[in-house]
Image 1: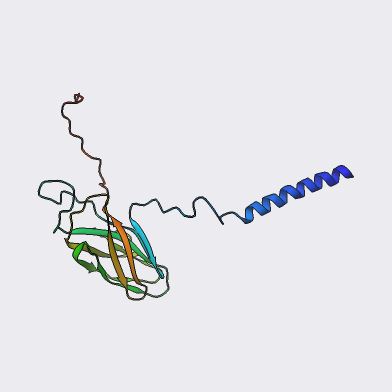
Image 2 (image 1 turned 180 degrees about the horizontal axis):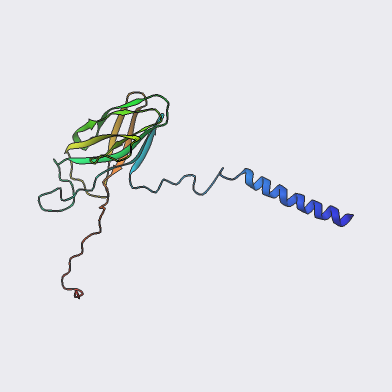
Length: 184
């Protein structure tokens, strides 16, 4: 009988350890402060969340063929704005100290439990509305990898400021072949 009590106590102790370990799961984790693995910026204002916000990669934006935005040029933005609330909200305006003006063309309403995609290319997702946003007359030259502050103003949620990066290229960099290895 003593042996049975020991086995029972050991089984109870193991079960209690498993239950207690499960109680703290997710409370303090190594990943609780990690950012999402996307290139663009993310911010939240009330029920509005802006995800993957960035300026497009400057495909030969300058006369010299270099991939950067020279001062005075325009830059296209892209992002997804979601509304977790039940009532519609609206993107009223956008501004940045890095541009003379920010122009928004297209839909501005973010429906309750819906999304608005901002991109120069219209999305094929039926559930997302579409708009385009252009930072016109950049006040500084911008290169990929840099970030700029852009403030979005919503009718109900208020304003949110993002540190938007200039996107990386979608294609591999072309290597110049000169003086090194021969091509076969």
